[in-house]
Image (cartoon, rainbow, N blue to C red; front, side):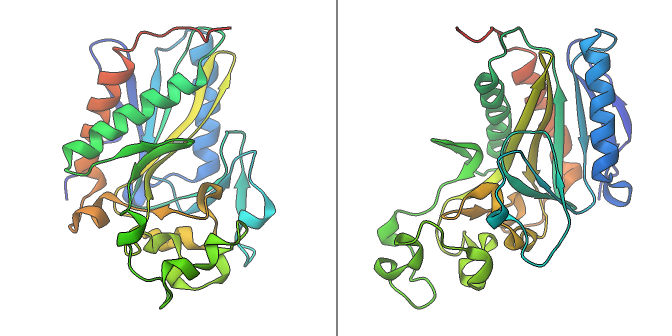
Length: 271
């Protein structure tokens, strides 16, 4: 496995990358959150350029402001409540997390920022031979499932009798592995490769994206990931059927983030 360097990655100009820790140096969530706030303050004061923190986290569940109680772990597993948008997710080994801390013109166009992150990550997936895409109304990068009529029977039942079709509050946490988010690919359903959740304060972005490279995706089965009950999660390794490492993906992510974020025409939100 290729070693991952720690520290700053120099750029000719524009976006700066900082590696906080990977593998055995994976970063505890609260420490990374504190570093985000420090870098955010420095960027607001124009003491540093736009900066993207890149890292792996130690295993943790984090919940955005819109998370409801019926989406959290049932077994009392701790959850860190954070100030980003979105709902609950998991971070941990095998997942590349990026926190782009970027100053944007005000009033900030949050949707445009999310779309730029999606564009970069879709480019990353394409470079590895995975077709990532957007799903209308759902942020992040997705692998689309099969047409409904081509999907396998679920739990021995035909799709016409799928309990989720008649119950919008169907709870995958309570209903066995055949309904688990980690098995969405086997069911031929849409599955999320990369989650995005951000916050903007004083015109500067925080939080960012989590790209599933080679994690144990069963960690998502304790929750309702991103509050979505009719889809699941995926990883690059799982989609490709071979091991893909963080070390392989890291420079590709940096290349695509730089290509998108440095070349974007940043405009204020229309009012």
